[in-house]
Length: 267
Image (tube, rainbow, N blue to C red; front, side):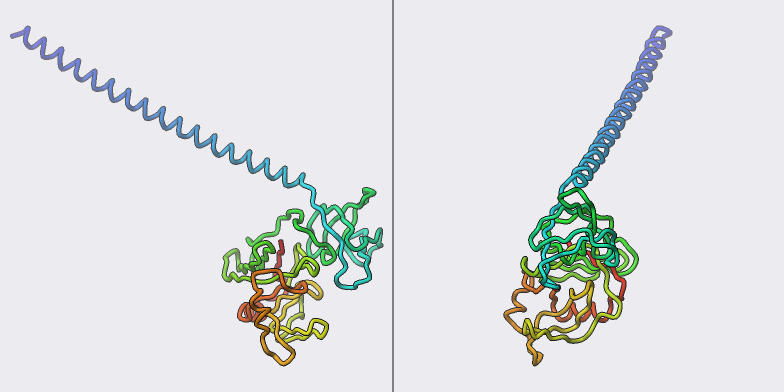
């Protein structure tokens, strides 16, 4: 009897000890697995950070070239100023189609440039056409309205307090009548319900200015107020003389809702 009890006790001890070790072993496996998972996740995040940092460095080191072109005064010369101010001294005059290195994209409607002799100056962005411009920190994540136009996609996006509220196809200028790229803002007191330009034999509705003669406005109309259908069909492709054309309802929305001082970004 005692011998039988001893055998039973031994079996119970073995079973209890074995189960405990099994549970402990499984717990260790789970801990190891989680540790490996965290390490793997950390490596992925670290790799992404390094990749983003590398891209930022490459973007900063990238050389951006613009081409001078006077589509406004048409005298064939584009002034380079000592300061970002047209009242400052002129240090150089670029000729039409002359290339210049773009160093910075600046508000509102300026580029910092480097001349061939190494001097640095500032040029009104309305006189510089470029495929790409230097990056900047302005974006849709600001309080108020932001209008962002992408020349490659020919799409205008309107944001309010960082939220996309309206998107539309549009038409920027052709390469010979380019739409300037950069940082702009809706100008005070520069909007109207109608305009007509005899030189182009076209007019438009609901115009709003963002830099001098450059406007947001509707698709073209004739002098007697009829929509030019063949021009309307060009929406979504570069077709204007430099302004940004829009469907009538979108132009009206900007005219009625977007206040002066609102940010305009053109890429």
